[in-house]
Image (cartoon, rainbow, N blue to C red; front, side, top):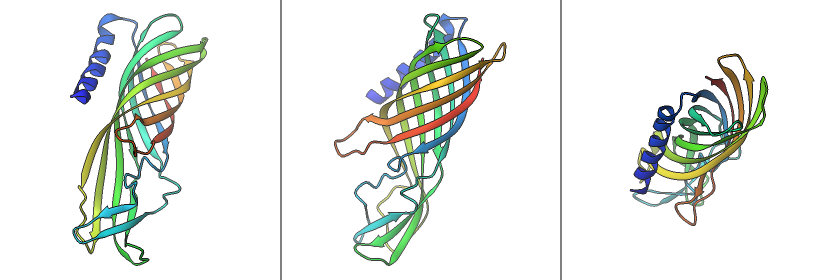
Length: 221
């Protein structure tokens, strides 16, 4: 119920921005994202249950998580000469990771599968202009509702794994960063650097913190 209320609230905020102001601005931006290893690793206890036993796993390149891309849309409403309120939604999609399976305390490989994480955030926050001119600098901070989808594919194992091919979870976090804006007349070129904490409000005490650093570019209208 709380998740549905959060989605509805943010959606209503985004929808209402254009109704109350003719000075709204639209942002279409995207770029590259760098996750910490916990974003692309949901097997935090280092074990996967099967119908016959418990098998350990080793994730390939776990120390260097794969990068991904992001796409975002924002709609902003000016609150003053320097501050604006905004709402938006987006997508984070990361490259596929290969997970190798081993029997407990064994070096013999017994299987593998591919694993991919996709995140759909709904966001609301504040943009504050630090310096305004043809070239402007601003800071931004936002609250995020993150709908996380974990997908498994190409499963090969001598045992039957007790894993769903797709699992989902809802997580609440925040993002903060800095942006640069270059005026093109009726539009502006945007460059942003953003830090995201996906699960700042954690669902359990044992949940590991998930973080993303993103570089984004796009246009403001």
